[in-house]
Image 1: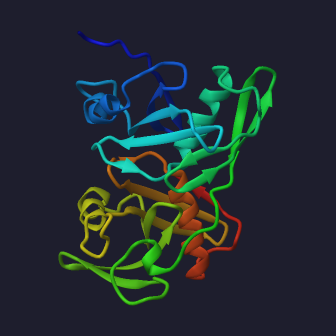
Image 2: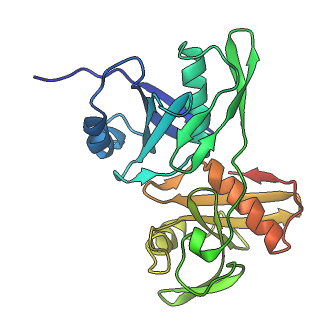
Length: 251
């Protein structure tokens, strides 16, 4: 016997998700987890960068699980938590404009910026970046990874590694639009140096206050935006002397 599941499709800056309300409905969680690659297929499914499960939590107000389009589970997703927050508020799961969400990266506290009955924007503190190699995680000696050479095929890139609860490898390039993202993104994502794989951000420094970024997301491939990636990119830009501590990141 088949089971009907209701979903909502949402996106943050084009980073799109299929959202299931597992608070209001007794859905089979593992069924949804296993079905994520099929659901996310853009030709034969609903289409999306991932599946987000809005779940109850024993410790916080809610729990978020995010399953990438390849079926792997992510610790955290910046645009995903913003969509999660809007869904929870506008669908009456909470009437609070600030609440806590349990994630694999820790507790995240989104803040709704409400006008009338609708959320105009969501502000999220992504937490303190983690810079020690073991926290990324990345193979090699203890310490920070700043402008470290990483060889992929016949090319060598200078990588700065940052964890925002999930791993990021940030690489600065001169022309980000022309950069062959699809060629090097998957190779770096699955490079042996990253035992849990990694998100990869290719970034062009336009000025110390303006960065352009393209992302190859771990488990999802090329996406239009990545919230944790934008944070990691600015952290890496500051560490390498490429940016000031406040900057615009164009995705």
